[in-house]
Image (cartoon, rainbow, N blue to C red; front, side, top):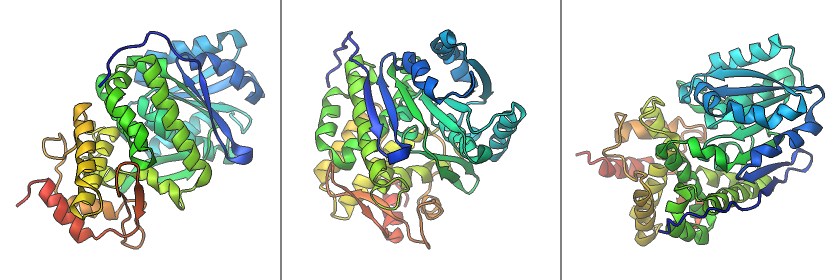
Length: 380
C-alpha cells in the first residue's frame, strides 16, 4: 500500500445531504473548523451557543472551537461528560436536558456536539427532545464519527437490552468534518474509524475498496490528500443513501453491513473499552463475507480480500484472540435476536454477492448462523 505522505492539503469540500427543507452541508477537509463562525451566524438568534463534549475532547480541542468563534462575540456554554460508550445513558441524557433548561435554552438556540459518535448521538437525541426540537451542529472529532455517525440523523442512547435501542431520527443543521482534528487520535481510534470507510467500498463501490487496498496506509497516516478523499467519498456515499431512505425502511439498511454481528459482540462485551465500535464492525464485516462464502453466496476470493485488507491495516477480522467477552456462538445469536433491526424473531443480515454488491438478506437462518459462529470461535 502507498504510504507516501502529501504535505499539501486539498481545498475544503462541501457534501450536501439532500432532504428538501431539512437539507444540510457536511464541510470536509483540513481547517474546516475555521468556517464554523460564518456557518453558524445565520442560525443564531442570540449571541450564544451550547457545547456538549467529553473530558478528553474538551482538553484536546476546546481551544480550537473557542478560537473559531472568538471574533464573533458569541458566548459558549460548555458541558463535559465522561468519555466512553457507557456515557450514552438515560441518566446522562436527563442531566443534559436539565443543564439546557437551567440555562433557559430554547428552540432558537444551537447545541454543538464536539466529540466522537457517543457525544454526537446523545447530543442529537437531547436536541430532538429539548422543547420538541432545538437546532444542533455536529463537529465530529473522530474518524468514525466524521464518516458515519455524524451524518444521517440517527440519535440514541443505549440500554442494558441493546445498543442504540432508544433514539430518534433528527437531522443536524450542519456537520464540520475537520480532518486536522484527527491528528490527536490514537492509532487504535483511527483504525476503528477506518473500518467504517471500508464499509462504503464493500456496500456498492468496488473501485473505492480497491483504492483503499492501495492507499489505506496513507489514510491511516493522515496524509492530507488521502484522508480528505476517504472522508469525502464516505460522506457522499452516506449522504446519497440517507437522501433516498432517511428512516431506514429500505436501502439505508445496507449501512448496517457488519453491524448485526458487531453489535452482538459489543453487547456480549458489555460495551467495555476492550472492543471499540469500529473494531466490532470490522470483525462483523469479515464475518458477513465469510458467512456468505460458507453459504455459497459470496465468492471465497472476495471474502479473502476483505479479511486480508482488514488484517493488513491492523484491524482484527476474527473473534478468537479478541479481548473482552466472553463470546460464545449461542450468546451472540441470542443478542442478534435482540438487535433493534430484528422483527418478530426474524434477523436480517447484510450479505454480499461480492465486493461492492451488498444486499439485504431479510431472514437469516439462525441455526446456520450459530453453526458458522461455532466454527469461527473454534467451539467443539
